[in-house]
Structures are given as structure tokens and as C-alpha cells.
Length: 298
Image (cartoon, rainbow, N blue to C red; front, top):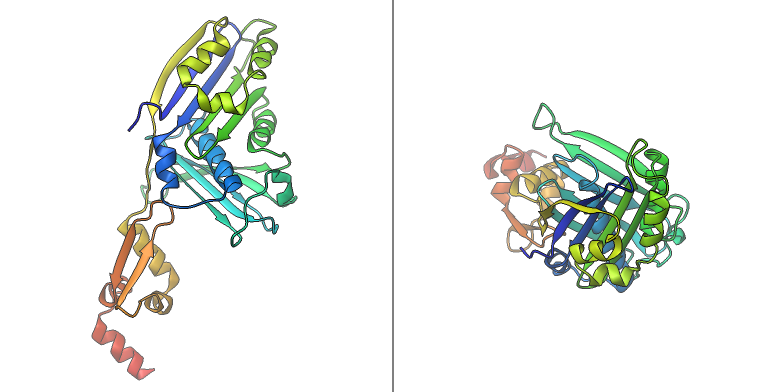
């Protein structure tokens, strides 16, 4: 795990501002190694992966935080999903319409496009996690603009956000005014002006500490610690079994190929799971003789 894959929390105490910086490098390239995306889709996915990771440094998350975009508009992009866990593992995926690419301007996705931010924490029952979901209207051209508006409305705190991604890096920077009357009177305006000098290419090119010290060297910058990040997938044999059970016996058996094995491939990490007929039938508490007998009776 490379040191460049890092979430960094910081404080600008005199200005009364807290912030989070995220940089994904080896985790991002590993994520991309499991799929091939056209340029716009790749950039949009990187931005959402960076955002989901940023938000785990902004909000209390014991389990995982995910961001999902869905739209019914025929604009190339069907959905985007990104997830970051409290342990710092990141994964994500884009689904497109055929060979089309995602739009550069997200407003092309139509008025029905929504972003869902979901936080999943452990509940008293391990099998029943607590879920909290917020919906974000996608009325801006870029994801960072949409999230800025969301934080302004939901938390009623001035917030700035910048996201960027290319085929080797994904990064994000979030600033938010601390609740209450903290900081000097001109703090937010001053730091906001500094934030506006940063562009996406600089966000990708400069490491966290160097970037923060360059931007805020006159603002009593205090680094609050970091968290290592890595690509990680939560797929498992148990989850695949649950998916096959949800399909029902007939559809699960239909997935068996000519070699007598059903193959399930995880879209996030590429791992493959194999099930024989006997293993599929065992999911439905049947044996092969029982299955043959029931088929004969039918």
C-alpha cells in the first residue's frame, strides 16, 4: 500500500475551518485494472471515489459510506457506484449504455438524476446494519458543485469541494466552516479566495502536505492525522450464495454452463466464483436425486 494513498484531515483554526484531503494512486490504478472505461466515465468514477473517501473523513462512519448515481435518461451513463469503508478500502464501478461514454456535463442526465449518499454502520444485530441515506439533486455540471450545494442545504454550513481524476490519480479537497462563531470575521472569505486559486491539475499533481502548506501557509495549518487507503472489495462466497438464492432455483440452475459449472464474476474486483449443480442445489436445501425426482414428477 503506497503512502500516496492517503486521507488527511486538517484544521485552519484561526479561520474557523476544517478540511479533508484525499489522494488515490495505487488504489485507483488497481480499481481501473478490473475494467476498461472511456475517458469521461473514468473521470466521473474517479471523482465519485474521491468524494466517498473524503466524506468518511468528514462524517462519523463505522462501517462504510457509498455514493450512487442513477438516471433513466439515455445519455450514455446508466449508473455510478463508489464506496469507502471505515478501514480505508475503496471500490467503485460505472455502468454505461453499450459503447457510449458518460457526458461531460452531468446536467445532460436529466432532471430525474439523483445521487444517493448512504452510510451503513453496525447495529445491535450484526445482520441488521443501521443505514442512513441522503439524496442529492444533480442540478450542476460537476459532482463537486452538486455536493457543495448539498452540504450548504443539509448542514447549512459554507462548504467548498474540488474533485479531479485521470487515468493514474484521483483526488479531492473539502473545506467547511466550523459550526458556531469560531474563527476570525474574514476567515472564510480569505480561505475561500485561496481555494479558488487551485485547479484540478494542481490537485492531482501535488501531494497532500505540499498542497496544503502551499495553499494555507499563512493560516496556521494544523494537520490532524491521516489514514492509509487501498483498493478493497467486500465480495465473498457468502454474498454470492445469497445472490444466487435471491434468483430462485430455476434461474440459478440456468446459469450452469456446458461444463456443468455456474460462474459468477465480481464486477468490482474481477474475482470469479464457481458453483457446481450440487452446490447450487444445496443453496435450496436439495440434493441432485431430489432435484431429478421433482423434475420427473413435474
